[in-house]
Length: 427
Image 1 (tube, rainbow, N blue to C red):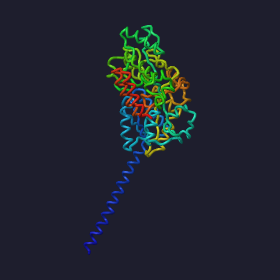
Image 2: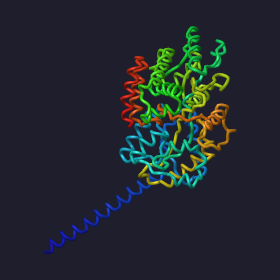
Image 3: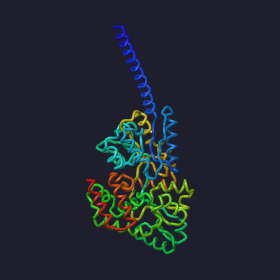
C-alpha cells in the first residue's frame, strides 16, 4: 500500500509539473504572439526609386506622431507587385495577414480580398476623420462594397500618359500626337529616320495590356469601357474590334527586343533617344527624374495617350484592415495618418503620384503633379484593367496571357475570342 501511495504521489507531482511547464510555455508563446501582433507590419511592393522614398517619408511622419507604435517596413521587390502579391496570397491563405497591405482599389480589393471575407470594414475610420467629402465619391466607390468602405487611398496614378523625348521631337520637327491619326503619322516619320517610334518592355505582360486598355477607353469612352467589365458590351463588338486593330497597328512600331525588357528598360530607350515615345503610368516620371536624373519639360515631356483627353485611367494604391490582426487599433491609427493631408503630401511628391484627397497642398507638387491634380478633379475616371481595378484577377490573368500572345502573333480574332471567353466568367 505504501508503494502504491508513493506512485500515486509521484504521478500527482508529475502532472502538476507538466501543467506548470505547459502553462509557462503557453504564457511564453502568448507573450511572443502578443509581441508580434503589437508590431505594425506595413506590406507593399514599394522598393524602387521614388516609391521607396515616399514610403520612408510616410513612415517617418507616422513615427513622429506615434513613437509608441513599432513599425516594420515589409516591402517586397518586384515590378507592379508581382512578387509581393504572390507572398501576400500565401500569407492570407495561411491566416497570417500583415497588419495592413497595399492593394489597388477596385476589383483587386473588392472582388478579391473583400469578397473572400478577408477584410474588415473601416467606415468608422472615415467617420472619425471626417473624410466623406475629402475624397471624390467615385474614388470612395472604388474602395467600397455592399455599402461598406474597406480601404484608404493614399495616392492616384494616371495610366493614360504618353511620354516622349523632347530632343527627338524637336530635332525632327515633329508635333506631339494627340490623336491616333497623328500618332501614326509621327510614327511613320520616326521610322523613316531609323528611330523606334514606341518603346515597349513586356517582359511582364501587363505593360502591353496597359496600352490596349488605353486604346479601348479612348475608342469606347468611359461608359462603354466600363460595360466590358459588367458584360453589357461584348468583346466581339465592332468598336472593340476597331480598338484591337489600332492596337495591332501600334505594335508595328515597337522595339524588336520588347519581350526581354521591363517597363524601366523601355523608358530608358526614350531617355536615351533610341525611342521617341512610350505609354506608361506616371510612375515613369519618378523613374525619369529620380533614377535617370532627367528634367521634366526639358529632357522629356508628356501628354495624354491618343484620343483620351478628358479621360483619366486611374490606379489607386490603398491600405485596409485585414481580418484577424491583433493590432487593429494601431492599424486604424496608421490609416488615419495615411489618409491625412500631411500624410499624402509627405508621400506623393516623392512617389511621383498625386494625392487622393481633393484638399492637398498643390505647392508641394511639380508642374506635372499640378496639372494632373487639376485633371483629376474634372476628368472622367476609368479603372485600369492592367492594374487590377477594372476586373477580377482571374480575368486579368487571362487577359494578360491573351495580349502576350497577341503581341507576337497579331491575330485580332484570336485575341477577341480569348477575351470573350474570359468575359463569360465575369458574370
